[in-house]
Length: 165
Image 1: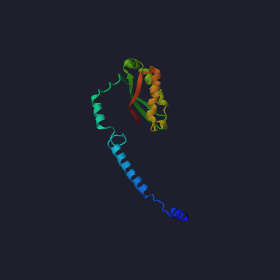
Image 2: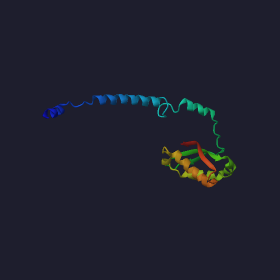
Image 3: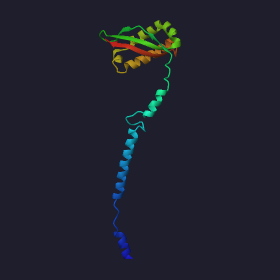
Image 4: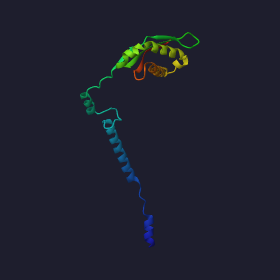
């Protein structure tokens, strides 16, 4: 009996070379399959946004109709900026209006210009030098104009000219 236990104790331990080789082969195969799937467009992660077949389907579909809108041009406004020197802001905008309300918004143009002048005169120079100043000004004007003409009539304020001298 002692010989049997001695033989079991002396049995060489298995090395992990076989398992390591299988793991490397599976990793290379998985990487190749992943590259193929993304580069062929089966997954929208590679360089192609969509397969060519899907792009061809879009050609047969009619384009959606544009919304019924009109534009109301506002006169350019030049206001002095609250600064130590004599700096001026030239601001010109158009209003994107739902088509049914163009006449109503044009009728309220004097009030809109009043709101525009009052707001722009209150803006300080440091507010205008910010990179997000134009986005913030558009939002404030849209909200104020919406109060003057009524909600749902003006869709957006389009800035045509914004010059600080």
